[in-house]
Length: 376
Image 1 (cartoon, rainbow, N blue to C red):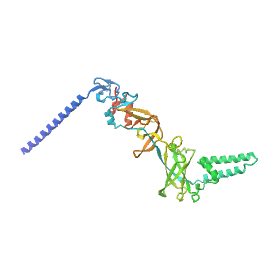
Image 2: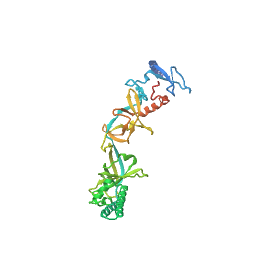
Image 3: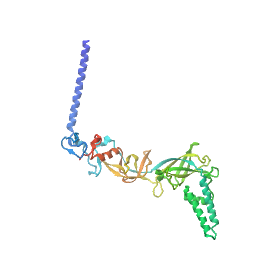
Image 4: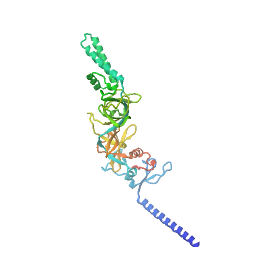
């Protein structure tokens, strides 16, 4: 029994001695680390613009923070500092996980999804009939000797024309109606004489800039979930609904097999491409969604100038769109001013850079030194 106690005591003695050795070694390394790091000055914890060559306390009793030589902000690659730029050490950049990528030209598009219904529109059918009859009356009265009669006929045509516009018809559709000389049966019935149907759908106000006559449309209906019906946008209403903040579009959809019936509901998909001033599919400079900081008053990106320097630039952008990058569908903003092709924009941790730009002269260390400032 006595031997067992001695062995146990011996084990504890060895364990304690080992821990003491490890503690002494760590203290030695720590002391060497402190000696190797050179303090260049001390800064106020709440106002980094206030510095001291000696340890001090602020008026709240908080210790000034030492700034070491290796934390000093490097110069830019050009050897000059950009006015208004944020300067970070390589350690800060690594800790924050800052990532940037170049601005490039991309083919942008937007997936617009909405719901609609196959039109049953007897009011529009009736108005088209009134327009046709007004045209016939005008033609029969062209040789009338009474000016008032001819003027009255012209007024009837103009009134019917205006009503058609208010109901959503485009000028092209009205001209086509004149040539056909009869109202469109597909507005009230689906049969072999009308191998197409009209589909009405609502587009929200913020998506209107993407909608144009002639764009392809695809629809799906519950009755035939595995089938896709195709067509194109023919007209966009001239008035916006003040309640839903949307505008109605009219799409002509093929219906050769007569599967689409009036009043059917439809899921509508529009792949709308950004177009240039000539109405052609264009390529625009674009920045990733994550690169943009929207303050509500202005929109900013941060340019990566190299060597830990980042410059905030105000940009003008269009509505968010999609593009394919590295084989993946991603969100981008078309950018109209503020950056150039090839500029590198920060896409990760840019909000930290923005915070640093705002607090670097106010209260950098209030954020526990997550990102240091240049100090001087």
